[in-house]
Image (tube, rainbow, N blue to C red; front, side, top):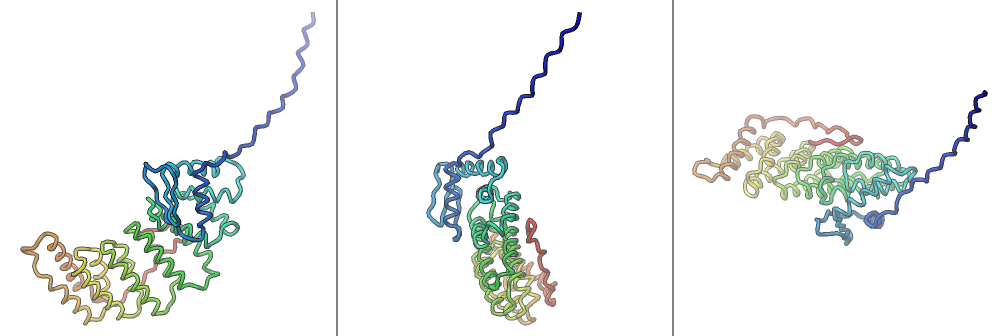
Length: 342
C-alpha cells in the first residue's frame, strides 16, 4: 500500500507592513515654549522655574515663568522627537534640543546636534542670544554648566574670524559673565570663560584695559565675599602694564577691606598677591595702613577674626611681597571641551 503524498506547501504569507512611526501631536506646553523662544529669538530672556501651585506658563517679555510639571511634559515630547522617531527635519531636531537643554543643561548630544546644524539652520546671533538667556537666568544648573559655557566659546570661535568688533565682543561677554555671577555666586566656569574672552578678543590699548579694570573693581565692591570675582580682578591686574593702575586699585581695596567690608578672606588673598606689583613706597603705605590694626585682646570674636586676617596679610606681604612682575599664565583653551574651573 502506497503512503499518502505529503500536503502541498502553503505559499509564504506576505508580511503585513507596519504603520510608520509618527510623532504624536505636541502638547500645549511644548508649542507655547517654542513660540516664546521663536518670537523673542533676538532678545535675551529671563527664565524662571515656578513652584508647584502654578500650573500654566506665564510670560511677560522678556520674563518667562515655567511650572516644573509643564517643563517635564515638554521635555518628554522633545525626547520622543529626538530619540524615538525616524527622520525628523533639522528644524524639528533643533526645536527639540531647545527644550531638552532648557530642562537638562548637560545634554551633550543635544549640543552636538546644534553644532551639526549651526552653519546651515542656526544664525550665530540667535544662538548667542539663546545661550545668554540660559546662562544669565535664575535656573538651578545652567549658570554653572561647563557644557553651555564651552558651547558659547565654540560659537564665538566660529564667528570671530568674520568679526572686527573685538572690543565690543569683550565688553559684551564680560557683562554676560557678571550677570551670571549675580545669579550664581562663585561661578568659576563663568570667570574661566571671562579669562578666555580677554585672551581671545581684548585689544592692546591701555585705555580699554583700564576701563575693564574699573568695571571689574566696581563689581568687586558689591561682591566682597565672592572669591571668583576678586580672583578675576587680580588676573586682570597681573596683565596690566601700568603700575600706577595697580597701585591705585591696591590702596583703594585695602581701604575698602578695612572700612567697608572687613573679614572677607577673598579680598585679602587677592590683595597680598598684588602687592608685589606696586612700588616700594606704595607697599610701605599699604603695610602702614595694615599695621594700625592693634591687638585682638578685649575685642569681639568677629573683629578679632578680621584683625587676624589683616595680620596674616602683613606677614605674607613682608615675606613674599617684594617680587618682580610674574609671568602671566594663560588658562588652557577649552573652547571645544567641557570647560574648567579655576
